[in-house]
Length: 457
Image (cartoon, rainbow, N blue to C red):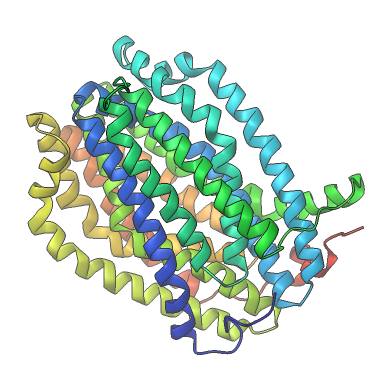
C-alpha cells in the first residue's frame, strides 16, 4: 500500500475526480436498485409501500452503526497508510472485521426478537406489522453479511482505489434487480412471495457481493493479516477504532432516529404520508449521490494527507468540495422541479401519496446544496479526528432544529407544514457548516490515538 493513486502528490481536483467517479457509479447502481425495489413494492399496494417505509429508520440505525465503524476504520487506515505502517494496517483491519461481525450479529438477534413491539412503537397498525415481519425477518438474518461487506468496501477505499468497491456494489445491485420481480411476483415454478421475495432478493445480492469482496481483500490485495489472539492488542485496536466509530455511529444514527420520529408523527395523521415520506427518502438518496460519492472519497484523502503531514492540502480539498456540492446540488434542482410529477407517478397512483410525494420533491430539494455541505463537512471531521464536533453538528441540526420545527409545522400546517421544516433546517446548517470548515485545523496529537500507536503484537 503506497501513494500509487496520487492522494499525497497529484492535483487535488484530479485525484478527487478519479476517486469519486467510481464511487458515483457504484452508489448510483445500488441506489437505483433500491428505487427498483420501491417500484416493484409499490405495485403490491400502498400498505406494502407503507410497511417498507416503516422499516427505514430501523434498517438505517443498524447501517449507521456499520457506517460509524467504517468511518473509524477508514480514518485509522488512511493515517496508517499515509505514514507507511502497512502491516499494522492489515492487523487493524482483521480486528475491526471481527468486532463488526460480533456486534451486528448480536443486534440482529435482538431485532428478530423485537419486531412487533418495535414497529408498533413507530405507529404501524396490525396489517402493516404482518407485512413488516415478512420483510424484516430475512433482513435481520442477512444483516451481518451486509456489515462485513460495507466495512470491507471502506477498507478498499482507504487505500485510495475506489474502483473495486464500486464493482462490488454494482454486482449486488444487478443481482437484486434481476431477482426482485422474480421473487416478488413469481416466475414459472417460483411462487410469488411479495415483500418476503424483496427481502430474500436483497439478501442473496449481499451474499454475492461479499464473495467478490472477500476475494479482493483476502487473496488479490492481501489487505488482512490474520493475527493470533492477543487480548491487549485487540482492546488497543478497538479503542483506536472507537475513538472515531462511537461518535460517528451516533452521528449517523441521529438521522434515522429523527426520521423515525417524523414517521411516527405522520403515521398518526395519515399512513399515505408515511408511504410518501419513505419513498421520498429513497429518491433523496439518489439525488444526493454525488455528495455521498465525493464524501466517501474525501475522507481517505484527508486522512492520508494528515498522516503524511500535509494539513494545508487536506483543508484545500475540503473547501473545494464544499463549494462544488453546493453549486452542483443547487443547479440540479432546476430539472427536478419540472420532473417531480413524472417521478412521483413512477412509484404510486394513490392520489394522497401522489400529493404528498410531489410536494416532497418540489420543496425539500431546494436546500440540497446546503445539506450537501453539511454531509461533506460532518464526514470530513472524522478524518480530522474530530468526531465529537461532527456529532454535535448533527445533534444541532436534527434534535435542536429539525424536530422542534417539524412539530411546529405539523401543528400549523399539517403534513406539508412538517415537510417545510426540512429545507429550512438544512439551509441554516449549511451556512454554519461552511463557516466552521474555514476554521478547521489539524488537531493536537494528544486528542487522538496516533496511527502508529495501534498495537500489532
